[in-house]
Amino acid sequence: MARAAAASLIVAAALLTLAGPAAARDDSPQTPWRTLSPEQQRILGPIAPEWERMPGYQQQRMLGAARQYPNLQPIQKQRFEERIRSWAAMTPEQRSAAREAFQGMRRLPPEKQHELRERWLQRHSREPQKSR
Amino acid sequence: MKENEFMDRLRPWLARAESDVGEMQAVRLKAARLRALDAVREPVRLLGVVTVNAGTAQTLRYSVFQQGLLWVPLVALLATLAFQSVRESDPGEIDAQLLTQELPPDAYLDQDFRTWLAQPLHR
Image (cartoon, rainbow over all chains, first blue to last red; front, side, top):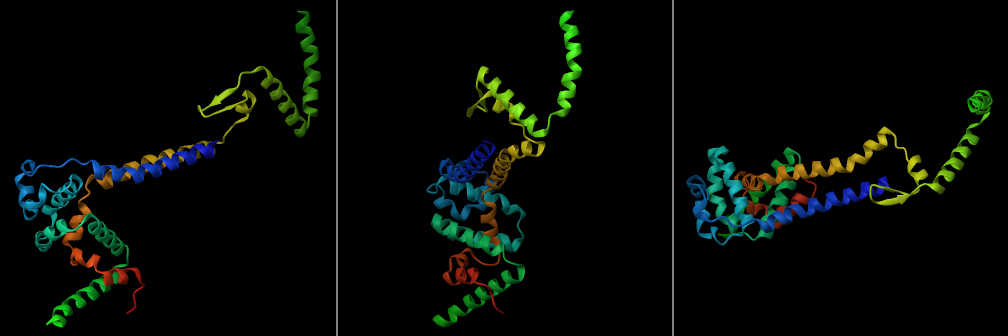
């Protein structure tokens, strides 16, 4: 009996874990651009034209990213501004895949992360020369 | 008074007989007693899940450790929900990290990069 009760609770927990984020993702209401603070509008300015077309969950993620902006270093702020538009233009599946790979990368030892980063940057710097 | 006198006389005999009862006999006697009680008692519903005989319910005794184990799934459930609410409280945090580190987000969609990521690296 105790085993059955424990198993049922574990199953319930697993279901809640799986269902929770999905429900939160789908149910988030849209946030009109005019309701954002001037600071949020400034940070998210590059994606203002696309804002009203974004689903609520994506807007929430963008607002979450914007909340981190004041704590960023200048170089990070520059990257944020340069990349946010292409990031918003990706499909949800692409963003999800990128997050997954990014988190996989972060789980690697620092030296391996460095090696991967260098490898990609080297190849990326060679590519324009190849195409010339 | 007569009854009390009889009990006083009987008590030493019962006490002596009790000390002579072996472990196996004690278990049998207990089982017989529980069977007899089961015959006259109402069944008991445990945790609203299962119905058992009253004697069976009485014999269900868990150690402190076992009782503690019963709480583990509930604690795990609450911990999962708490962790999830913290993680979901700022869903854009990971996006901000992804957008601001050295590699651009495109890199993580690059098929070669994803292959390197999945493979052990060699110097």
